[in-house]
Image 1: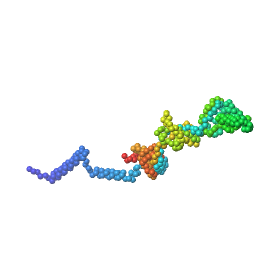
Image 2: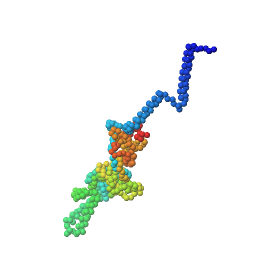
Image 3: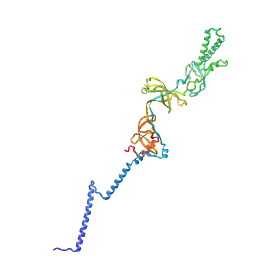
Image 4: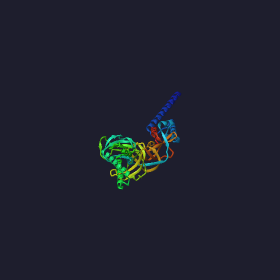
Length: 408
């Protein structure tokens, strides 16, 4: 027998059925979420997530547009310094223009005395030094007293001259009518010969003429400097009897010196008499002129000696100093920069900084030749302002900024 449900019972059953359906739906959604987590390859989007990704894409697009903006790229392609910063960093730029670049071969050299400006003092007779009046290394003028000497042989030479002079004066007074022509000529020859003997001893014309004074003492004289120069060798010893032809002193005029360069065969073909050659000595640079060469190789060094004349008016250089001569091997024309302008870029290649107003950009260059602190380079245009002082500072600042000129 069927039973009828009361209205109250129907309401309770309806409520229970609805609650059960709601709980089942929640469980189903929860299981779907867990299932999605267990399959990472699948993605279930939510409106919120889709919105965030859209915003991210928009931001990425804006960043890409900003990076591709030419103006922004120019601002990052170097450094910008105001005048005050440039002054503090010591930056100096010059407009580059093509110029001559000489590639030179080096040759070791040594300064020597110019034989035409050097005087070695020695006597053909044995002597004894009685007084020295200058020291080694002294600068002397022509005619300045150097030392006093004495010798019995000097006395004999002076006496022979006085006798020959007296005979010559006597035959001149008698005349050619009273004296045979041969005797007359012999007297003239004798007096001139004896006078030349005194000149060979180092006596001057005035000193020889003074011998005729009755009060003059024979046997010695004061040796006067025959040229102006420097006392380079001094072998004088007071009271010591020196043999004939011993070097007593050497004077050299160093206002002009010779340079003997040892040139290798591969370079000698570029050398010609009259050429101007760059010379570096004592940390300074000079210009010398080629005046001669040996035309034969030294058997030990396998080099040829080339002689150059070097002006030395201030006497900064001295005989015996070493030097370097630079003979031109080839000539080129192009952009020439000093070492201070070159820096290493981020990839290790050579580069320079080009200035445009307050902006400095690194530009890669290629070094073709280098010589004595100068470099022949390519990669620049005439008129560009290139930093030649302060490039190291700019390179350091750019490295700090982490900028790569090749955008790698």
